[in-house]
Length: 407
Length: 222
Image (cartoon, each protein chain N blue to C red):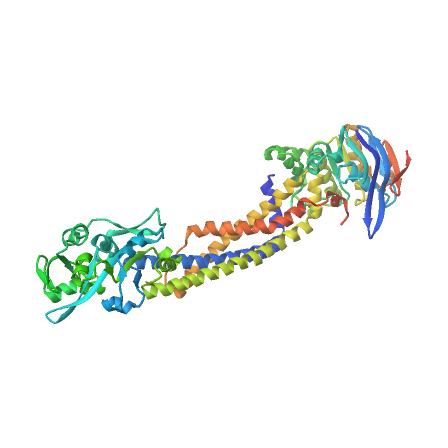
């Protein structure tokens, strides 16, 4: 006979008591696992979506709106270009790319266009949709602990031109055109176009992205600043923010850094989902506290009852030579198995629950997350240990003379 | 050798002090079979518990060989019990969820014996008490006499030098009781020291010495 055999026999001797306390902790853990599974998978989905969209945080002048940003309304205010350096040097984590821009409207042949000044090296990385989606593979960034797009130059021909070449070589007299703008201007690569009295050479036509960028004309930021007589000015900084960091409060941090700017997250669906996730995360904390209180009380109650029921048995073991350490070990080992069973059972029930209700409440398919298993076990065993501490101590202090009493 | 020197054990109950042992001095030589008799509440079981290192006296010294038992820690006393002492209880105190054999294996397990060795030894001990064929029976499936015999086998598992028996025949019919006393006599003849608390005068007659207790004091020695 081994120590663990003795525990197993004792546990199964009191099945009913065991099942009641096991159920308490199992259901609590199941609730935590299901909420966290849905939240984690939903968050990963949002992150993926935001990465697909590219820019997800906008820094605008105080009086500007998202509408004025899309309409390139230059009268809605300006920001100093030095803000970009301020952000870069701030030590605020979670900003994977900063794209300062200055936009204005112009007309050619009675047709309206938007000219946007960009810094090409900063720009291309933020425009995932400008490149074939398949060339981005999320990888884990060591510094930000969130996936960042890695540029893999697998494209050829025109696609290569719109990625590698433009990054390195957008000259001051060059522009590249969104697909719609190119079509309206009937422009091709190498053709000259005149914008506000200055001649530009079309360096490339961008592939369609399905966004507002398709109707824009892009030139070097410093050229546009010179053209508009606004040196050192921009009217937006587009930020590729790490989704997790946005969730953790990136926007307030930027707001604190740039108090005279307005910081917005874009992508309303994502924003709403982030709010839902936040709410669910809070609910999961409520469940966590409840499980500690209810589950912990259930286990403590079971353990106290067990000590009281087994006093004579404990006294007998002590009379036979068991020390207080052996008795403590006996109860903690039992708590461990109880916690382990509650954790594994809670993980299974919680995951199944999340897979059933996830598609209804978060519009996403939920799959089992293995890391949740370890979290569930850790919480469950931790609570079982905590709840068993006093009963185990009480058991170790049982008066062995009780073994001699007639019951 | 077991020795008690001016041992007092006081209980406090409902603001009253009860003297369970009142200045007991006693020496039990190795290999002795001592019976302790007396009316209920005379302090017989308290004496046994105190000698067994399980009840700290209010005053006085209890010695097992050269060790002053209550100058040792509770865990140290438990280790001494494991090595030297075996207990026989009136109500057998078998663990209800273990079989006869598993109950016998408990002291061996506490001593860290290998499970295979435990198995062999438990079989031998059950054979010795005539219950080999009941090794897989749980206590609830055994008669009182059989349960006490399993308890005797368990007590013998670590081959203790000293055996403390608290009313070993108290829950048994006369025939089974005499069988148990027969076992104790056999163990005495093998050199074990036995201290037995009993109400049964016939059982007490089998001992080499008998003390009578009243109100926590030894009043006669036969």
